[in-house]
Image 1 (spheres, each protein chain N blue to C red):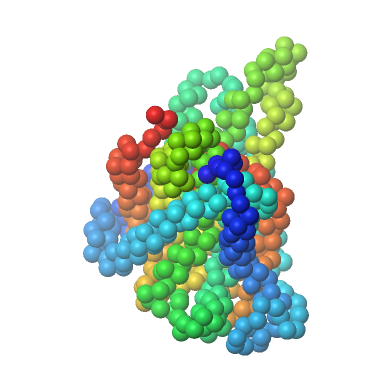
Image 2 (image 1 turned 90 degrees about the horizontal axis):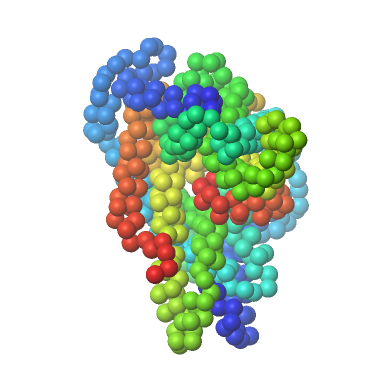
Length: 281
Length: 275
């Protein structure tokens, strides 16, 4: 609530800070616990009472995780899939968004509505048929199955960018047209630079969604060296090493590191994106 | 465009057709008309999955909304450093369900986990957490609330910022207390946001899967067997593709009807404008 004019006394301030810090501890402790456990010796986690900091600091768990699963390969798979999906989304969504915002062609608005309608179709309805299609194409257990379905841009991103394109003054384009610019040049040299914040927003969400994706990669991949890192560490919890907590924590730490780094640098785009669209990531 | 057609609209129709067949992928599909839907009604696991999912939704959505609204109100207080705190509350949102499920499974560990350690510190006996059929689902729900609260907090925060400050100033002149201001200004003007968050949360929490896969595998017993986990088992462990497709459609129907009910019964009470 906005009580900016209300005088706040010292006592109230202190109380608020205590509350803030308490809540921060609640959200950060699991991450902290993950991090410190990952530097403990294998046996130390089975000592009761538990201690936050490792008594012998060791990177043993990080070395082990590379032998339990093809960690480097899986990490690379995640990087490849996420990058391709990211590039594909940015190109396709911006092209489609621009067309829907500016180009005039018959049936444009109906097509746009149909496009938006796909947003309402949940993933689990199309899951089985998409799986069968991918199987039919012979892509099961290949990286193609992971990135191709995400490549073409979705309704969400198209909608987001279209809204941004609509806010750009038309005069800007008209001037370019008079100077003899074609649609593609207008799009690439005039319009795109105008919507970089929107592209960044779409980018961070695509990155996060693709990196953290679990269900789809779980079902289309079955060999260890084709898995993404998110699936890789999930399968680790079910296998022979399910109770090697230090290694599990090391794997979890490394797998969340990229998204946390991106979050630290691009925080503003995460929150702006949520406010703009309200769609769950 | 073509991509969307191939990967969305095509599958929607194919899925409907598939749901009327019996198919194990290897042999060719056999048309059994509404056989799958009939089987589903008599499948006790289907009902277990549905019941457990409904329980999960009831545990996470209302509590999650209250927590995130309180967080939003809190981080809306103009105070030095509030941006830093806001970021820390949002941090769990960006991390994967898989990773945080692994971490929380360790926190919930009955022998060496930190949660039992804390319980023991304050003199309470240890709990079995995820191994206790009664506690397993609430445990997962608590983790999910922790995971998602930052997200709804940001939406609520945007809603709060949209409320004109003059209203609070006027109320203050009239001698309104904070509780009164909250009840008569904040809540009514926040109804569109509340409604939106409710609808979206119900839809997304109906699809809980990763948490179950990593933390409990549907157990103990079938205490945490959720709808989507059951769908996953049917399709990718037992290769009952036709049956799984019908499960997908039924879930779609359930969520669609629930959303429609919310719009019908609550939508009318949402005030979109200032008086």
